[in-house]
Image (cartoon, rainbow, N blue to C red):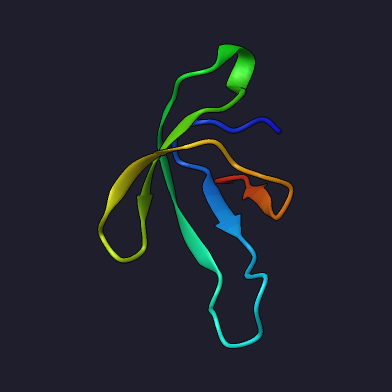
Length: 61
């Protein structure tokens, strides 16, 4: 997984009644765009995130 500042990180839900999470990548801490990422989630919270297999990056074009 590779991301740049400004890209969106989307984490799909594993349960039917739980919505997916999405947020903006604010900082990239790994080399060459690799995780971890500091993400500002759509609810306003920020956190250092190590995305799992249920996550994908949407490039900011």
